[in-house]
Image 1 (cartoon, rainbow, N blue to C red):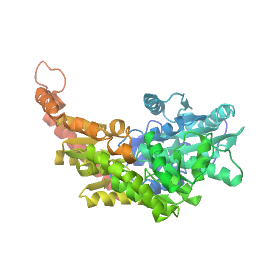
Image 2 (cartoon, helix red, strand yellow; image 1 turned 45 degrees about the vertical axis):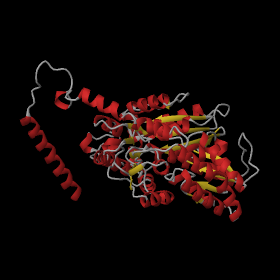
Image 3 (spheres, one colour; image 1 turned 45 degrees about the horizontal axis):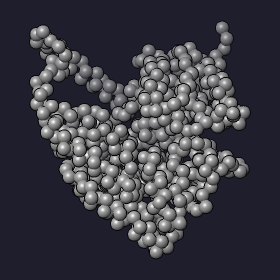
Image 4 (tube, rainbow, N blue to C red; image 1 turned 180 degrees about the horizontal axis):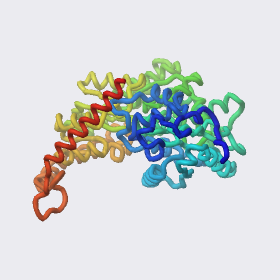
Length: 520
């Protein structure tokens, strides 16, 4: 029998030695657990030497009322960022079911390239063979004629087991190697996972810039000072922002997350960063380390555009006349577009993309009554201005909102339109409330400047006008079985309330035992 191969203190983890561990209650191994195992996976990860990573994630992405994601697997966010970049290969290390789901949803959303996968079993996981397999896969992929970088992502199980991606070489044959951990028990939303990879790439690129000259982007370098734009947005928005910056003598820089590696250098070579999506904490840390000021909010609606242009102008030391010229060039058009396309009705709004507060501002300036806005993303200094503006309008703003809170607000307010995530939309339609899915129907529209001012009216008003249709559908299906009576029955279902009461007592006993264990 050969000696166990060890790489670092992960070898001291009890589960590897075969002794009782943090995962003793789950059978003594992390394989089979996932992001919804919550604290058990985190305990295993800390025991495996991953405390530094988890502590950083806890600081960057503070959790809300839940210790597990309520959106899709967070790793989808970082996976999507990598798959959108030219000449970047993506490799996942995780349970096969997780990799299958992530690969499926990435191609559902339009990815046109393969996703690499390094499989494992319990033996390769605990002996270190998985790390060797990852290293071999990276060496095989590192072809400078095909790739600028290879991104390797640990999912829940390899992170909890301490698979040390930090020991991979920084580069192989001139191809950059970027290893990240994106566990569901450490990253609350897939939106924030985008920041994990964006921040890691910016850090790598910043180190390259400090080491010497780097390549210019394909489009060349701007002859004007640039504003880097932080956060994924509708493709027309960066062009609209560029037009609004022109009177200030400025240009729109790259959008982070970037589409090619060389754009990272151009993004760092900016005069200021516009945190359009304010939750990119790791990326902002890299920009601040490079000495770049951060400007929050966005040029959305009349008030948002006026304030944003002033703040950008101040960041670049523009004169009051320049700022006024930029405002006068666009504010009348925005006000006209808002007046020409009013939105009438009460709307509740929630989502996990990070642009929820911006959309709410635009809806309110369009004439809508928006009493509640919930975002799954956390509160940051760069969302403060938007939150203050909304609260001044009487809006309840909930950061790190849970699904339960979003549904409760929608049910309590009974709006003319509910904009939210899939389960919120489903609940609204069950109640006969018109609803729109935020990600596919709202995020897929321009929001900035004059182009964004009237973009939401058509879809919102059309949905509100469907109220009679929703009432008709609700009346038509009223009484159709759900819960115990769902499906097709020849007779009444045999409901055993005694069994339910017994099971409820078991669940309550288990909950009390878990709470008592936490207090020890």
